[in-house]
Length: 402
Figure 1: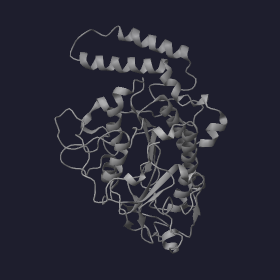
Figure 2 (figure 1 turned 180 degrees about the vertical axis):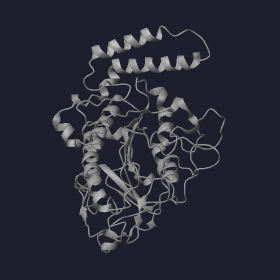
Figure 3 (figure 1 turned 120 degrees about the vertical axis):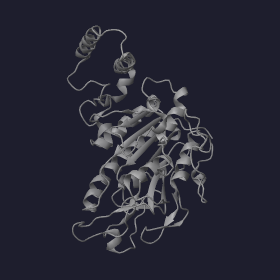
Figure 4 (figure 1 turned 90 degrees about the vertical axis):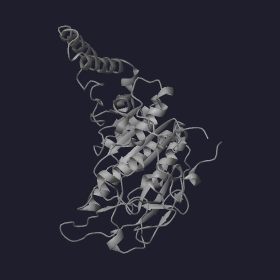
């Protein structure tokens, strides 16, 4: 199987409800489904929640897993587990999948941008590079992608700063640096600072910065993704895939809906549905989906039973025992449903999928051996991931070659 060239991770930070995404339960009572419905997709027999109509129209491009499961109820520990395949502890922080894949593909990449790019903010739950250190650090873009010009912090000048102004600022910085005495106790730190500045200037003055110039896209394309932060972030992600960046994360906060859950979920779902559907269709139309793994999940799901009483007023809590994920492209089949939950989406009843199974499948499709040694400079001999669960990795979702 040919290894995927890039991965795009859409991280629904906070934990989206399985019932209001890909595992609706129209036959359950209102205490579980909130009185909402499922809708058919363009794949016969496959239904998703009514708040995702645009993804329903292109379900043949992706597959859903309805039996994700683990036992971590806290954001930090659950995020760590879903990103590394390991439980926290042991005196060290293991690297997340993004850092591992990016470093594994770094040698064959060759672009000016780092091989790991995060739009637009880091998760903040743990160090995603772990003990791999600064060498594996991602570019966290910052900025506002829905602005007239997506100004990436430290790389793309904000709107109003012309190339002439930027050049003058670099020249002033060089003059100021000329007053700095050579050598000294801080010489190593000064050299690192200079190297970072040189890298930023090389990127800002080269073709790499143009990747973030969303003004090069038509209004129709930008509108198709949605003029929202996630919409324009995914448009930037498509351009990063075209540039060849090995691993791209789009962090989408706002899914931790303890109170007034349905209002939050509807707003977030509408934006995300439009953006992700446009992204998958765009990748497919440009013949990029087959070489790009796309995965979307949060750290866990939400409690199946709705808390209608005050102060929750229709809320759902943290729930890792059964939740959903989406996968597409890069060797994953489309139009499939893996696993099943019970009548209230409270527990898997078929084909449970553990985090190490899920991540191991992505690693395999990227050409990274999940059973191989952990990449590090400390002589660690442990495997990249723990052994698969009894149910195993998602081999039933791997597309046949050709």
